[in-house]
Structures are given as C-alpha cells and as structure tokens.
Image 1 (cartoon, rainbow, N blue to C red):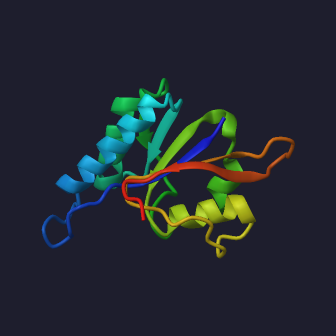
Image 2 (cartoon, rainbow, N blue to C red):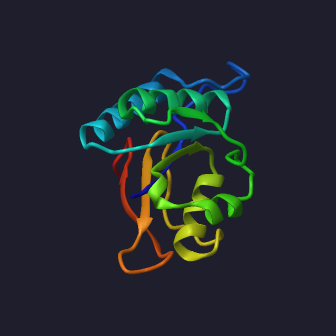
Length: 154
C-alpha cells in the first residue's frame, strides 16, 4: 500500500491574488490527473494538505475523484520550508495517505524516503502531479518510487 505525494496545482501569482488559489490551468491539470488516477483505481484512505489555499483546492479536486474513506483535512508540517524528517519517520504505506504540499518540501521528503538524505533529489515534481512511493518487496523500510502521473511529458 503506497504513499502518494502531490505538489499543489499551478496557482495565481501573489500579485494577482494574495491567497494564491489555483489558476484555471492549474485547476484543469489537477482535474485531469485526478480523473486518470481515479480511472486506474488509485485507492487513497485520506488526503492531507498544508492548509494553504492552493493545496486545499488541489486536495479537494483529488478527493472528488478518489473518494478517500477518511476524507481530507489540513495537516501541519507540509509547508515549503518545513522539515520532512517527521513525515518520513511516520510514513507507513499501509495508511494509503496522499499528502498535498509544496516545493521544496515534497522533493525533500521523496529524497529522504528513497535515499535517506533530503539533499539527494530523486524526482522532479510538477504542479498537480502524483508521485507514488511504496516499500520495495522484501525490505523493512526500503522506499522506492513505483509510478508517477504528471501533467506534462518531456
């Protein structure tokens, strides 16, 4: 059972709206990725987001398509400059949790889980995309990236 990491969808610039909600393009990208994930039967038990408008809106779109049985909610520690160590220590694939947050946090969390060091990037995230991590079979805590869905290819 996996852990899903999502960088929020593209948002409006702070100069346009200080709350930085999703832009029309960002909303469309997230909706498309969420629909594909739902079509593949991605099973998420709960969606947690940073609480920032763009992350909350992204989480709401994913919840519409993935229908997590435990719903969605805001969680601390998912902001851009937060330390990923607490989430890495608590990550259990059996929970099937989707975390919706920001860069550089998401990239650092993925790196920490896969390599043991947040300074060794393992994946370049895209706004609105999903990176799925799981424990490699036969290992106790050997996290690997098993798949990704991204709005743009190339």
